[in-house]
Length: 213
Image (cartoon, rainbow, N blue to C red; front, top):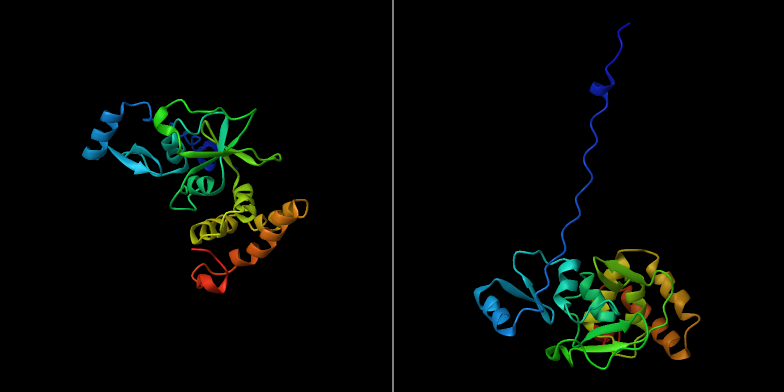
């Protein structure tokens, strides 16, 4: 009886995948250089910011495009978070941020960023914040809940964003209902009224679901 060479029967293990490098931030570039890079196609628009054209449009690059807005004291929320997760084409009319510690400062580092963001303070649970590279963003489930409970109109963009995020995890809808059970009456009502709309096909006419334009 011949012995088998274990090196021939066991295939070598593949090397672990290499972590992708962090996208470069360009918000510190002088405005004139950024404008020139946009004209030549070196930079392209990404939400309210820009990204190098050589970098793919991923969650990491969308975070980096927010640059001086998404600092370590903030997390992206609501439609801005949905945009980072790839569930919305736009981060919204204003970048929505929430504070992670203490109160928000009166201004941002760069004067040109003023007026681009709306900052709120949310009561958070464990698991509500996800880390993407060096940036913070509300988790997919928390993002859906914030879209549903928000007093803002449920636009088509917010509807589709919430529905796409719910498709990533079948437990998100149940978690939204559970969260709403201990929320204020207004939030509880909005979630109860809007959640069925997210379960419909977004191609259904908006008038049939009470979705705002």
